[in-house]
Length: 500
Image (cartoon, rainbow, N blue to C red; front, top):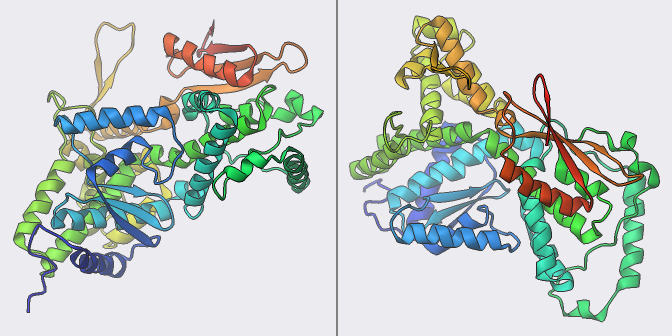
């Protein structure tokens, strides 16, 4: 009797179920992965496009920008200018993996291995996700956010709510805590807030709210801010999280507007680890699906035809165009991530003397899976590349470093393939994945709440690069809307100050 899981491209749910169980057996038994419970769902191409447009979240509030993105993605897809992702995976518990119904059975197996076990393991174990996200609570929070904003639209009008969301979305990248957790209120303040909320809801109760769907509650009361909190000493300036500062200290925002800012910054914080681990996350998932699919073939669970279909898709995903190729748009995170994972396995199993010199801690240890799991758990893209990128892989990718200064007539090749050059290339590449270098460093440095209520922001320029003038003015307008008064931004270079 054949042990093959499937022989045809067509699939049904019984085939999916037994293939999932075989993948799970390898992922948990052989690779010893540690994952959240899985929830695998099959969706249509239109549902996949809809997921694209709403930040790939299964529950999200309505906003015009999501519809705009849906229209764009649908047009590109229908005209053949872009393809759909094979899957979308949600960092939640249970971990939700959306599979495209048009996939062949081989592709369904690949994406289950990739998403339901590769991404799932990374989400559950990487320190950034463990520290900054709550996988068990995100779905409930999204449900609350959707209902809350819908209730606000009913009560205050869609235009009013949309205006707040527009401003909050414009500041989303500046609405995260990068280096510290958000401050927690004291127990006394929490109890006082609940008491004021109960009093408000009792006074403001209206028969109109009986018509709302079950589970939707009217927005809470405007919180009372103690006068001493308005002094800069209490504000703990400077403050890097603009949305948090505006939510807590804006003189004009109402309670429901503050809650919307809190919702948007919670989403921004949820996505922040993903921005710091793109190479590692995709590299982990790609390495896991590559390992599982090959083991399935070696054990006679899939056919040679399925193996070839898988390899065709896999090599397309990890393809890295040359720098002079029209398709080149930088380093492919799938290619770099998978290349580094496979290279770590090689160094653990068959190291060269060069590998032993560069990686004495794990070269030749034979435990490639343990080494990889330790890296997946304890690093982000920047530190992972700085610690694990090998000279061999730099040669394979033909990497070199350029030194470019605005007032120089020529570009200088500052690092090549020698011992010193490898270290410079590795450091330069790692810095490109530091979001602190790509995101503007804008902080609240002052707020004159006793007189004109002017808000003072400061941008510390990286390598002397100022903010784009037109974009800066547009975003500052959103800050002024939320603050309710004048806002001043000062750009500070390394040696000089440039007034905005």
